[in-house]
Length: 294
Image 1: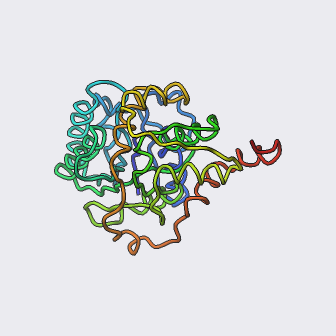
Image 2: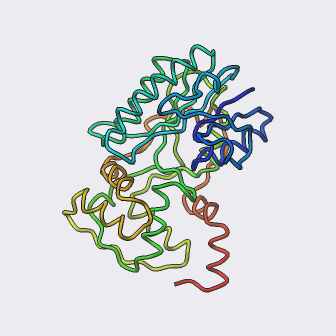
């Protein structure tokens, strides 16, 4: 198949494009600066947020992956809404199926998750769409994973808000990619995807510490506002506060699968949490072993 991947230079896209090529597909890697793109696939100019190059990029494609969202500045929900409407219309006109990586979570969710859900509804309403809904994707470069990694690695003791007790069903990046590769062949609709374990964020941090040979003290406090939490993350990690705030807002929402149809449609053995961390940190863990753990 001929496939378009938006967000080809992003966290998931960098892993997905080579996997699609290995599966025998022709891949167009969408980027705003194709001259600077040094990844696999054929670079094509596309700015999803304003639609520049969209019709040309999707023309002749069998499927188009929608892996982009803009949560770093005020008004991101409106921009994502407009971009999704344009993308669905262009994909439908070109006869291309849309594959969208959305988010888990239900009920009183954060603005960030509401926007992710809204984008999914827009794409499904406007084009033939397969939506995969996931929680935290465990891999180097993912914002949620990087925040957790840096908190554990940089702080021997942490004073954490009550959201560390929220349950989450993380999935390893290689497993997420396997589902995405298979997605164009699934029936249109939504599919929950997650790893084999449901964990709290506190448990995830403690087990990350164990895998990397560290001991960490985590003290939970009943009150720490989202604003203070995001400022704290901005001080301790290299993630900007503009990214940390919407992520923190969503940490109080339980993100677990409510159905597992995809497990039988795309069967394979999922990586457990510890193995997912080891896979993400393979070179990093080798350095720790060479220089000794903290």
